Structure formats: C-alpha cells, structure tokens
Image 1 (cartoon, rainbow, N blue to C red):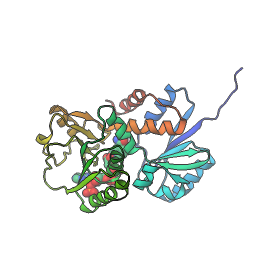
Image 2: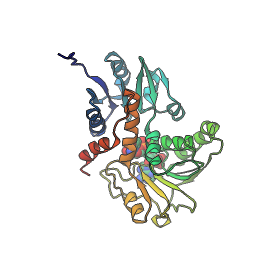
Image 3: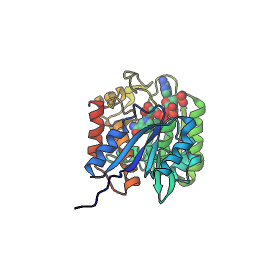
Image 4: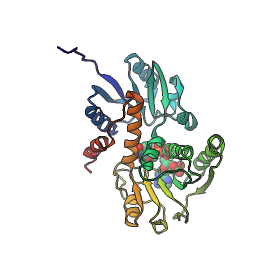
Length: 289
Ligand SMILES: NC(=O)c1ccc[n+]([C@@H]2O[C@H](COP(=O)([O-])OP(=O)(O)OC[C@H]3O[C@@H](n4cnc5c(N)ncnc54)[C@H](OP(=O)(O)O)[C@@H]3O)[C@@H](O)[C@H]2O)c1
C-alpha cells in the first residue's frame, strides 16, 4: 500500500473584495494537469486583518499567496524581503515562501512581458503605455528591464503620470541607461506616432460591466505593423483589441497577461513549469469565451 497523505499544500489570494477574482480557476486547472494535490484559496482579507492573515499564512505553512487590491503595497511591511521588480515598483502581487522566509515578488509586468515575448522581443522597441496605476507601473518597469528603449506614458492625471516617469528616469534608468521616457497628459484623442512598435492599454477602461467604453485614441493612427495589447481580462476582446485587429495589428489580450503571471507564480511556488494552455482554458471556461 502506498503512503497516505491527506494534507494539501496551500497557496491563495488575499484581496478585498475578492469574490469575483477568477485566478483560482486558472491555477487549480494547472495543479490538476500537473498531478499536484495543491489548493489555491480565494480569501477575503480586509485591510485591518492583513497582518494577521500574513501570520496565518506562516502558521498554516502556505507555499505563498497572491495579493490583490488593496494589499499590494501594505503587505510589504509584513514580509521578510523583496525581489528586484517588487522593490523597484514598491508593490507585491505574489508572495513566495522560500525556506520559511516570505519574499514579495511582482509578476504582473513579468507576465505581460512573457506573453509579449511569444510574438516579439521588447528589446529596442518604442512603446506607448496608457495609464500610470499599478498595472502600468509594473509593465513599464519590466519593459524597461527587458530592453525597451523608449517609453511614452499617457495618463489622465498628471501627478500619477509624472510619478511613474520619475521612477523610470530615476532608479530604473540606473539599470537601463539607454532608456528614454516622456509623459503626455491625456486630453482628447491621442494619436500614436509613426515609429511606435507597441501600444498598451493599462488603464481600467473596458473592464466589465463598461465593456463598450472607448479609449481616447485615434484608432486610425494604429498601423498594421504595431502590436496592440490590453490588460483587461474580462472581457478579453475589448473594443481596443477589436479595433486593432481590424486594422491588421497583432494583438495581446488581458487573459494572456493573467496567464503569463500565473505561470511565473506557479514556477516560484512549485519549482515546476505549468501548461499555459490548460490555464487559459480554465479562464476561458469561466469567462465563457
Ligand atoms: N490581465 C492582468 O493580468 C492584469 C493584472 C493587473 C491589472 N489588470 C487590470 O489593469 C487595470 C488597471 O489596474 P490598476 O491596478 O493599474 O488600477 P489603478 O492603479 O487604479 O490605475 C487605473 C489607471 O486607469 C486610469 N483610468 C481609469 N479610468 C479612466 C478613464 N475613464 N479615463 C482615463 N484614464 C482612466 C487611471 O488614470 P488616473 O491616474 O487619471 O486616475 C490610472 O492610470 C484593471 O482593470 C485590472 O483589471 C490586469
């Protein structure tokens, strides 16, 4: 008789609100395909309970956990260390238990870059990024670390836009001396200039239920040799993705980024590489794609 083991390894997601977060469907699909008896728990953690939740994760021996809104910055004070990207961005979305030490990583930007690398190398590219919030910060920093040479940040609120450009021009540029950046306050329809290689929506425009919301963008300025990406996972075929595909652009949807960061999270937690197509299938089943 083989040895019996009724104890699963645990990972999960801390957020508030969190009930609509679909990550469990993606991660547990992967665990199933990997024959791993692991569970990914979707845990509602209110801000005032975050410290105790992190202590709970230590006590229960969690292998790690994701952090989502509103915990990505606050969780840092309860951890034992940070990876390079998380330290640069000042935000953590994935905590990893490394021999009893909880280390904060940021896989949002890495997930985006890994989905981009399936069709294009970011090195040397000129990139327009709409937005300057958490997702934009993660993507901009990781694109710079991956060798993109020009990043144009387009954002509605000037303060947040300039804060991101200051980060890029300061600590990020120390590591990426060839990086050029600029900030464009977003008013009226933005026209993408010739010579741009990659256009990314990292705002929340287009997220369910506002599915027909449009970016202030002159879609006729999108050329067929550009790559157009959107971070919105639900629905994945946003208006931007549809407009860009109609113009012959290569497109990357928000599910690809979500899967990309999930793959990296599982690699951090288990040391094994999951099947990305199984994970995408798990999400598509949820979103009815
Ligand atoms: N696919 C994935 O794996 C993944 C991962 C992370 C996040 N996301 C998605 O990314 C989106 C953004 O998340 P976040 O954490 O970056 O949020 P956030 O920190 O709140 O930032 C939101 C950004 O969107 C801009 N924005 C929102 N509504 C706008 C409007 N009507 N017009 C112009 N700009 C607008 C904000 O501009 P202001 O600064 O002017 O307010 C800001 O730049 C969310 O929808 C989330 O679902 C996806």
